[in-house]
Length: 336
Image 1: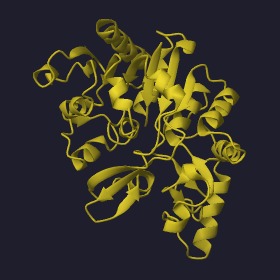
Image 2 (image 1 turned 90 degrees about the horizontal axis):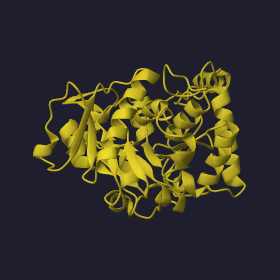
Image 3 (image 1 turned 45 degrees about the vertical axis):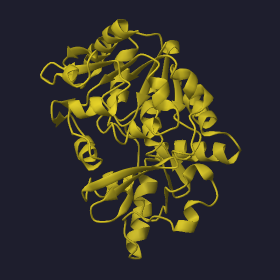
């Protein structure tokens, strides 16, 4: 049995190679929900849905977001209506009172649908409507995602990290506090990061299913350590549990060069070295790392006893994913 911690695109890409090594019924994926937002009344779970759509063989693999060949008629009309009356298409964060009213899972991350700053496809929107409606019928987030996983025919067990709200908020050097989606999607990673907060994490709990999954061997793919994996580590008891089980992590860096996304800026913003060494410092519970062949970082200088496997860690297709997954498997054999 193996559990993958998934966020962003790094770990979902790695999952393409997992099926060649483990039976699907031996794989659990715990997905980050700190990036979730409520947009126009519908709960959008980007990191969950990347795994959902990839497993259902409908993911847009050019963008690693949304459903391939989806139409965007509703999104375009929302933006047209807003522009027609001068409302614009910038993120419209609901006021403070609205952030903690109503549906608890959406706390601190509610946006108006006016102008819809994130592009939501029409089929994609049906997923958000279904998930939100199941929540309103009294289902937990875990149950709602399980229903969607069945609808998409997933072979692996897909779990949200918690049924409680955790919001990833970026504090900027300009003095603003932005939800991660506003910072990354609307602002394109600007302004500079001063800190990152996982609001609600101290009072949130990993579900019983997640706690059980973390008792198995764990693989952390080349995801962003701050905003993809950080919200999970902020949940009470998660780091302590990971310290008691075999954990292999794949670095999203080659030395000081990140493969993609805002990981380097976010790590620097929270006071961590934006490098492979910084990722190792962020994961003190890890027993092994998979590093790129070109990465000359010697992690054992700072973390004695840490096992290191090397391979080409770039993942552009399923063959790449299988190669990196095999390196993870070799590392697990050593540390288990």
